[in-house]
Length: 308
Image 1 (cartoon, rainbow, N blue to C red):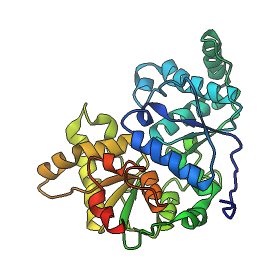
Image 2 (image 1 turned 90 degrees about the vertical axis):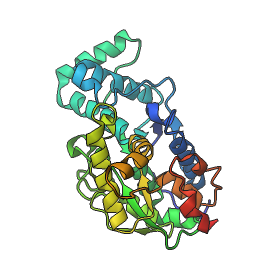
Image 3 (image 1 turned 60 degrees about the horizontal axis):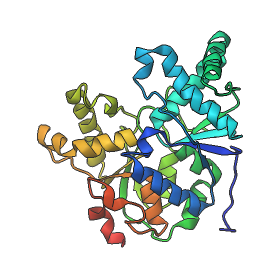
């Protein structure tokens, strides 16, 4: 560990797991913790956090859509954090959106802070940076640090990194393109480079930021299935063996709908889906059980068994 150079531009990092990583995204949470420990990266989970409001709350109640994330930001500041890391792009979006609006509109900030005080919380002082877990790893140890920890090179493995629509957009909230330590808003590449550092080959993948329709999988299933099929078809067309995700909502949507998509579109678009942190943990030498790769519905071990 002493040979690994760590650059920390973030100060104290508070981790906001959100509802997903404590539930269906547990594979993501566990594997991310393994990777962070291997790389010597530290973060502290926010205690007593609440749902960030996901994507729909703001359409029902504007103030609730701001207040839910604001409470989490307030809790992070009470921990002394300088940065909040999320692993879910939807959570990252919600927290960043609230910070943006509270910064831009002082009267709105006063109103949100007044509600926080009524709830027994401290006012949010607007002194946090929001980042995604991919950015956290990329900007602290980088591809070089990842490569230095690889014990199981994934040479020859072809992967398609799927970022989703909210990882890097909208850029005025997420700040992609505004800061050197943020990814590209149109053609993100941070995850590509981290995956390449394991020895894997990142295939050309123009669908990497397309919406998967995850939030609409129950309200408008046909639209969601069509969007997911287009993404899988692009990954398959370019020779990918695994779809690598950084979003628990997208990951669960793809895995749950894989067989329906194959049946509906007359093509076998089935492909194992893996969280980027699971693949890093596997490359770092962790067993499939430790990285919870035996918990993925789409069974990535059918592909990864050649590296065991």
